[in-house]
Image 1: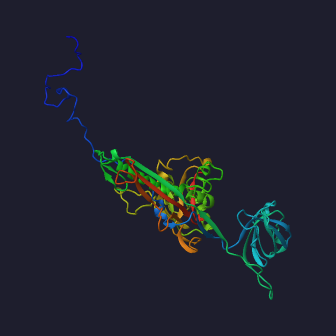
Image 2 (image 1 turned 120 degrees about the vertical axis):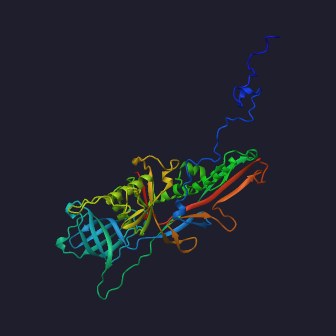
Length: 489
């Protein structure tokens, strides 16, 4: 009937005024050729640059196999003997007795022997004028108690003029041995000392990851060429995703060694993973038995002097590498630049900034950064991407009360000799190295395998390709007393 045809949609027979392939020139909506398709860049743009953060352990450590659930090693103790917090009890101007406090983890005994000569300095006293005074004495008697709170006592006879000895009861002193002395015709030293070794251990953890893509999507070809940091390229999106999963897993292999902590007894993780789960990562170990700078970033020469003095007490090696975040890097550069500026010594000439090349001209870029410096030890500075990356530790809180941001880590550059209990002999090992589980038939350093029925796999009727990743490893931090962790709090 005449009014049944709706006016819309309509059609247009009037040709366009220009020779253009316009939509209204066609009855159908099918656009096989559309001149308004956008100009496209064939290659994916890498706007974040290299996104991986793994490099730290490759620079400073090594990897070696292990075939046990536990890795154990022994580290040397101190060669010389020194006691702090020794309390004076029976005192006189010629003789005194000192009580030695027991230290948790140390043998509850006194390693001082009769006939040895000792240096005694008063640290705290009810008499302020006593503080800092020192005396030399010979040990005349030693008593072992075996008590968990008092290791024992030792008695001394002073070499000093009695009129100068002012030590009082309850004075707290530091004592160290510097030699021995015996009468003519007497017997030798009574007792002997065994070498002190400290046993440390760590356990590997199992890391896993997986990437899956169904068979149909594997047959899809895109128009954008995708790339990854390891050089893989192609027009298949699943290739990019698989490679990014692999890169992410490799990053986690390193960050797990840095961040891992043992599960506390009774913790939720222990309930899920079982007793003795977790592992001792680098940050955990250095926090527990290394050196910690709790002021965020050392910004002055006096700050670094205190760090150097601590390293002196730990017997640190000559060369060290500073892995730092951007702020600590800037602070070191600023400190060194300031030292190289105008002199503040009275009577000394005042010079302008002289760092960089001496023949700088106005067209030359001035290098405002430093790669290292020497102050008692050699310190080489290296930016640590892990501490700067905003998806990892970069940009975390600097709340000092919350033990917040780690700003850097000082790592000794070299190796140390330890007794490897698995090998049963002394061995040279880098201060940092990774141990992974491996035997002749099973290498778990970095396992990867494909399952499913796509992508060349034929292990099941699953219409997909599953790429599996696995590693079992732990990090050994040898000589943690040589490391310095820089953090807030």
